Image 1: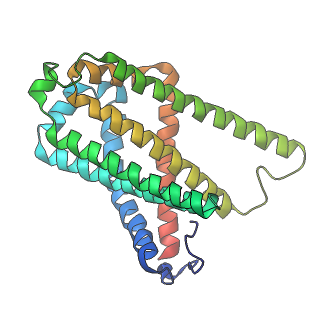
Image 2: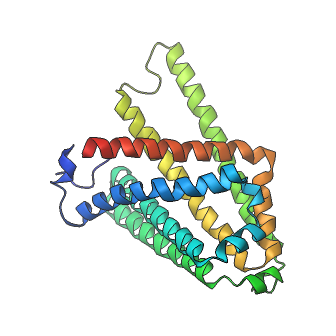
Image 3: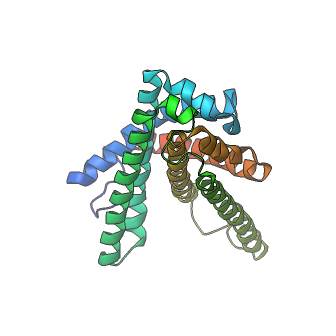
Length: 261
């Protein structure tokens, strides 16, 4: 992974990383291990035992009727959110060279983290099944909200598809010209690039997912309308790519931890 300080070690458990940067380094590895269990279990339930389009209001209401599932979902959400937000910090540090832009980027990162942490926490622990089932939520009947969420998924899908096509074209042209597929580098550099791209994509989807889960408290109809988008055939390749990104990010993260320790 990229460094946020010039004294970062390439191994040896990051012992040269100072202060807060060391705490972030430790958190990324501990949270990564937790997410193997938390997200792995979540994907198994929502993508294998069920399909995403079937995880509507009744599914969530039955799940959150058990306080243990609420705690599980909240722990998974907080761990995944801050793993993603603090992981984004590495990209901000690496790619925003100007100090002012870097400070603004990191400040925005923290704002996004705390806003979505609040939304997720309030949604999970204040959910009232009776009110939501009877469409008595604060924005019940406002189906346009679900449409906005749904079309944001379409935007995410289009960006994903275009990026895949552009990458294939780039690799094909480079190979046709006798050059390297993307750039001269060893497999570790390719693994690094894919790990970072997968992490950013997963974080973006997570933020959208937090907003659509928030709709469950607005009313049954609004939430089911948003979940119905996951069943549209044009979005299924995006869902497959998302699961693939999670699996790759997880496996490569375990590889990084194994190298570190």
